[in-house]
Length: 470
Image (cartoon, rainbow, N blue to C red):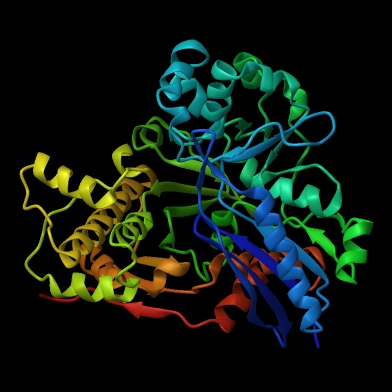
């Protein structure tokens, strides 16, 4: 039996522990444990229950022991931008406020006005302007609770915090750190000049460590609790960074990492911080081996998740897809990237109001609302491809959809029809796969990213959709 690794992959709605095993140059996966994640309201803010999430991670590790699985290593990935601040006793100073909270409203504009111009910030960091980026969260904290930042000794992003709880060691992982909009894209390190301008103590930021780093072993008390030890390895802790590792082929291909968000773009060796890239609001997120994910954040399946919740979960996701497919004559669309869809009180009403305001037919039935979401997403993907082709002066012929959203066959076919491009769907477990192969590279079981992608291509099925002629 080959070595085994555990990927802890936590998204906005759920988390899971996935076991990865390498046998005869093929990767095998097994889900060990799954748990719920959601934002909760605490002290008037939307927050993550990070301590509860860590208890779930520990429970998943205990499940390994129950199944007589002794993994060689564990790696954690989560969403980006959110963080925990620790005091001098390494205790959290505040709740882990979620990026969908309203505390960053207007903060981006204040940073441009008072700290650094939009153009200069993009030139430094190459990161797209999203109102919830860490830089604006920290600036909001400085305006409203400056005493918290004064007491802060350590800044850790969410997976960094979990790694600290496992090992007792503090570090900031590169791919997630770049999402803060505080890392210099060319120097690949914290931009101290920018941090000084913000008036934040640069000593709270930790040494940036890259994916494939072995951070350390479990703390002694955890070894006693679990009954075994293992290495804690840094994958690309930003879930999109892990997911993009799993794209089997990137030549002439645009990827869509499809989940709560849709992250759509290409992989580059260098950041692209041109005026055109700024105009279209593209980001240069750090990837494995200092590659760059040149992409755009698109609202994604969050919208249909919220619609499902608005209907009190009366319909499953497959049922909503079937109802959308049946709403053949409905054609109204919304701009999915408007801030109004980030965290509305009621997604369904927000979609209806948008259609009313823009003089379109208002969706009334569950099928019409779901159809509106799906065709709006497909239209957004088409617009994004056109932008990419203009910025890069290059034609793309294929789209590779990875992640949980690639199981939506109706949306995959819509994407093919709207973009007039071949769509390849898979692998589904892209994030966990990318997490696991980074661990295997750290352990010396896989040589490099090229070998990793060959193994992934040979291990998982990909389904192809071609444009339909109507």
